[in-house]
Image (cartoon, rainbow, N blue to C red; front, side, top):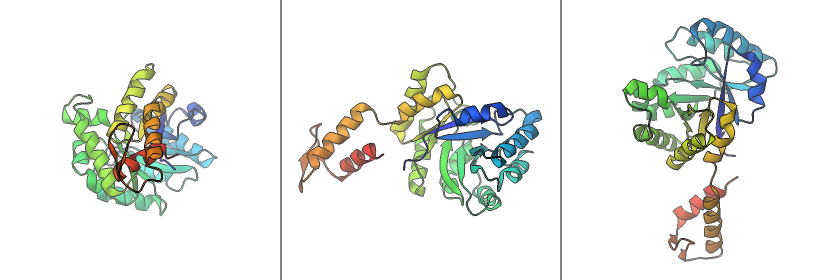
Length: 265
């Protein structure tokens, strides 16, 4: 099965939205204890999240970053909760911290490490191979702020490509791209997701249910890609030698691999 593509955040201190988020159609729902929750609401968010996970609800949880006053309490609250699917770790930088977190979560720990600082990007290959880490995600807004750079495609290209490379080298699924801040522009969300996909991402973080469908559309193979892949496989079927594909180029193993990947359910 393909890894989860669309990841929808819901604030942990607004329990009335939990069920709506679960029904919105995202591949993964993430209850957020970090950016979406003000410091004075952290305890409430943690308690509501634990209630949800202990009373039949299932979700991922983004805890607060290591080194903050709330990290340990967040981890203690969700560790062992029956409905916990996994933990998103913001500002992931230190493999030892991630290993310690995985140990606290237990033998079935599932951790998505968010790369959103200069230190995290610098150590991304070590982060990708830390115990418990099953996937990487990108936080462009935080990284841009940390670097003093703009959050543009050009400025963030190196970071995105580095995260894709680290994921592949570590044998992880393709990473999850950063949020798009516009909510009421479906075309912009689709374009951002399609751009991320062109670089090797296969997931996207979403901040509103309205972003789910356009994000999924951008992450999915386009009609032209599907038609090309089918034509390649038809041309290569039964052939033992070199074959020319629908675009006039030779079909070799990398081309066949790409065609199979596009059509894989």
